Image 1 (cartoon, rainbow, N blue to C red):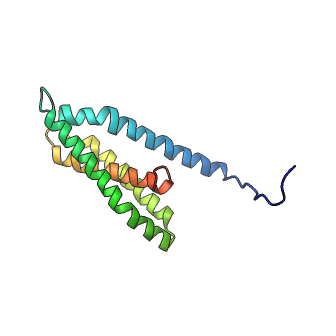
Image 2 (image 1 turned 90 degrees about the vertical axis):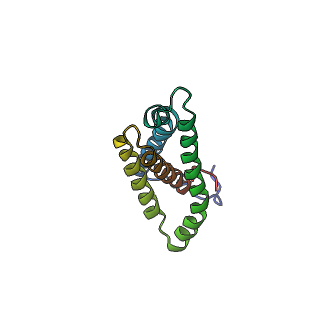
Length: 141
């Protein structure tokens, strides 16, 4: 028995659900591979390469991530207000997506000793990804 006062549930089209699932799959892979497992280790051991204890590499990696998270904290309220006012959430999502993909792809070209370009790309790609997650509602406000 259905209640005549309860609102009807309208499901999104399968194409839209698939698209969001692929975005979610991609951002989980970024966090696992770039931030947690592979690029963090590559950054400290190869790009910075301050063996035997890798203190400088670990410090610089932490600083880069901290800067990117600080940028998210500062930018998200402003971007949220702009999106609400201009009704341009999808444009912000697309711009954030492009920035994440391009900055992450450029990480491939970083060579040993290129510490500052690597840090800049990590800052940009992680900022864009976290910004995208916030826009999608995956991070708390």
